[in-house]
Image 1 (cartoon, one colour):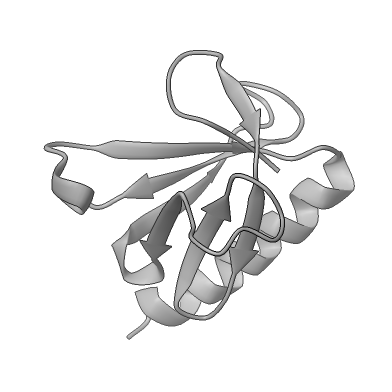
Image 2 (tube, one colour; image 1 turned 180 degrees about the vertical axis):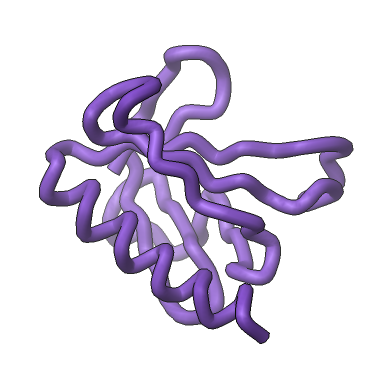
Length: 101
């Protein structure tokens, strides 16, 4: 999956989703994640296929996460539409648990 934070600068990253967090690493096999976002810090997942590309979605993060002020959005893009469906459904399912608590 690719990750982009500033403009159109995309970088391929290795991602791991579990019931507690979404982590991304520079490459598969790295020990320390570049980014570790607890699921409790994610407000929503937004499908961006119509607005951006056929494989992009955004995660809206809580204000103040990692010391940032205001709204923060993590932009993610998958390599294929099939991969998009898998990631979107999996993240949405984990989020559903936290949002209904």
